[in-house]
Amino acid sequence: QVQLVESGGGLVQAGGSLRLSCVASGSIVSINDMGWYRQVPGKQRELVANIASGGRTNYAESVEGRFTISRDNAKKSVFLQMNSLKPEDTAVYYCNANIRTNWLSRTNDYWGQGTQVTVSS
Image 1 (cartoon, helix red, strand yellow):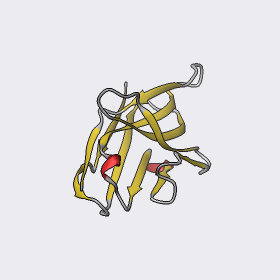
Image 2 (tube, one colour; image 1 turned 45 degrees about the vertical axis):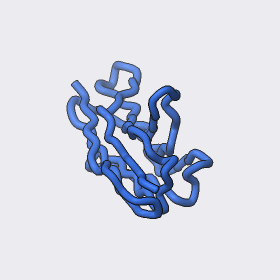
Image 3 (tube, one colour; image 1 turned 90 degrees about the vertical axis):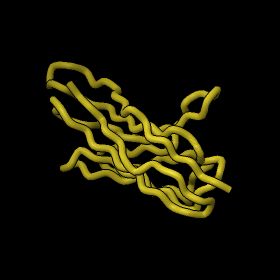
Image 4 (spheres, helix red, strand yellow; image 1 turned 60 degrees about the horizontal axis):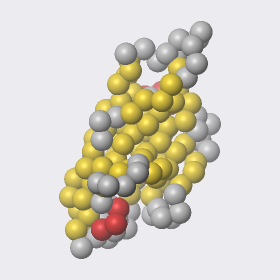
């Protein structure tokens, strides 16, 4: 069983910063890409940023230059530093990881439970 547990969401004023963390636990052989997605009511979940096991990163255009994704492979963790937050960044943020649980199986995508980020104007 694999679990992703997020932390770090909350309420912040526009222009402020928050740091999200996500830790993976359970029967894990290897982790490929890790990332953050967000969703607002009535809209599809969208990619915010992701990071490969080797460190290559990818960002949504709307957060480029404001958000920074990083990971600690030894701790099976991924982080999202969010600076210069805007009201339109308000959403539930979900951690995602592509994980192999044994050497004979293919990888699967796992999701955290989500953490609310609210940016007030």
